[in-house]
Image (cartoon, rainbow, N blue to C red; front, side, top):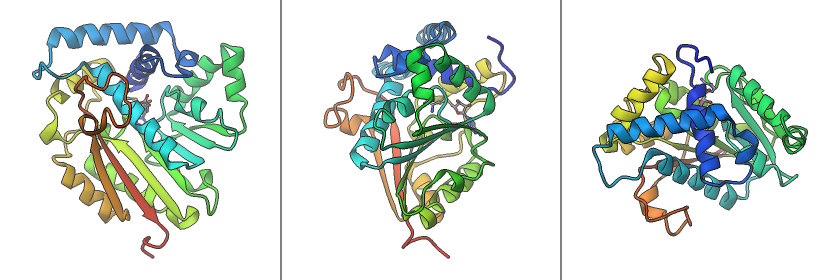
Length: 280
Ligand SMILES: C[S@@+](CC[C@H](N)C(=O)[O-])C[C@H]1O[C@@H](n2cnc3c(N)ncnc32)[C@H](O)[C@@H]1O
């Protein structure tokens, strides 16, 4: 596998293998030997570096909790219109569109979407998923693509950004928040869910971010989200009127996360904007 400088495909390969390792539905459609190789090599390197926090479960366990938490929120919302930003090789769109009522748009950079299509093309089951009218794979940069064409008027939209925000600067994040909250003017309501561990709580980011930087030839974590309050304030200032924060350690049992007693480090932000609250 060739990696271009700053290319995050390797991170999407790693997470795709986490979903397969965790036994999540539809993950097999995206499994590959490249992903298995990245998963094994990264886990070995992380184990060798050993985290400063010995009680914390390994990264793949945290990611499995993160993914399951977002699945839980999506399913509890009852929303049938979804946009997943930086969807990578996530199996969530394939799983959610098993329900023909769901309209699901996935967005990622062109080479990642191309890889996703290739992986789905390998099997009858994958080709059937690709052919679903409810699933749309869109090539584009979250920072420049307009989201309005993806939404239907008057129908609330659930926007997911998993494993993306740590790669954006605070300014880029704010622009993205504003772009998402503006959708409420069309849909009536928007919910945005994303993960981001504030630097003040993060015992892992030096090791994991350093590894990502080495693997991508230079693109690592931005470290400018100091506290939960900083992120909540940015959401409120960009048009969200209702913001909640939840950590995996608080809800692992209640939300039936896999292996709930493993202590993981996931912080999710859940923000809601409505057309009533959207500024002119
Ligand atoms: C860690 S992976 C996460 C993939 C997926 N969300 C998951 O959790 O399995 C990060 C993804 O973000 C995508 N990405 C990063 N910057 C992006 C941008 N500006 N626009 C679209 N996608 C982007 C990468 O291509 C990659 O697929």
